[in-house]
Length: 446
Image (cartoon, rainbow, N blue to C red; front, side, top):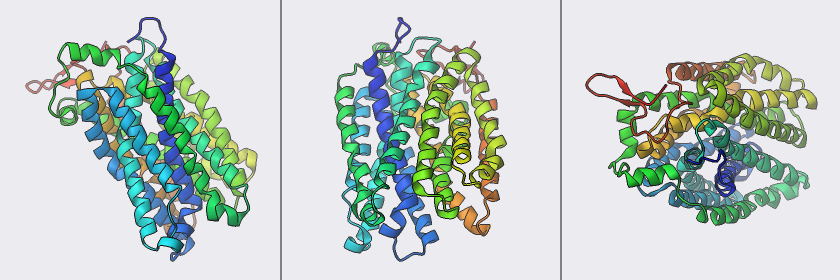
């Protein structure tokens, strides 16, 4: 932890670049799944089935994220945050760049979707620990009372990555349709190599976190399996993270990824207009993430997080009413409310909250394992399930709105059941540990 009230700029950049690359890659894949992967990699299917299949490959990465979270989380707790963050960055970025040179079904036949799934799996393994590591890097450097604010720079990187991906695809879609489908869609994937180079350079120059170094000096980071220890000894925290992810992650993908598909494929809004509306919402979301995180430093993580979840309940039906107008200004406002109020209201305080729920000796593994298990249950299936629900309802959107309400309700309840953490000492080895003989919690909580 720093005592100056600031986190070194190099640390902030290292965290932001990595999370920006992760979510540039993942949103890029989601956008491509919505717009091009169906006809290019699953051409024998009808358009709706092709979209479903492409979203199914989108979910493959989420299946492997918990495994990546366990493996690299254990490595991060045993050998340090820094080396793991370099490895995960290379895995995610490498997978994305290679997608940009994949042959399509017309060239390679069945090998095309197989290779696409393999690279998606590589991304998923790396992503399982990337975001958690970036958050921990920031939070373990941050001074007490400012962990929410400084921790929010990792989720800010997420918005930057989403914005870059939306901008890259918006530029690519300006090409003639034939050129875009032939080679233009590849350019945003190949551009990720730039972020890889910047991220690796910066991360190699970052020092290990003060909290980790202190824990090593005290010989506190020698658990054989920190992930299982987190599940056994920090059970409440583990399931709070799992439940808190349902709406944040599910809606974080459902609104921009399925929302983009809905307004373009199902409502007929021009792709360039829909992407520009989404880009505006990502810009506003940047401000929202920092703002909600800073508020959580003052009033606590739980009330801010619950506000975002309950806002999802309120917005579920109005969102579809608004995008149904196909008016650019109204559609943009709908995306802004979804991204900057609902998702940012949860995503802003989440970084510090999840890190504060686990002690340093199992923070990386516990954070990454629980968070990515939530990704598997919520974010991965969200675009696929939403598309399937619309197909089941004959094109009606109301089942998706009900799905949003359910996800938001689960998250609000999970956070309500969780502890408040914003005043805790994150260097304590007893955070959230349940004593097996009494069921009491040994914690530094106020």
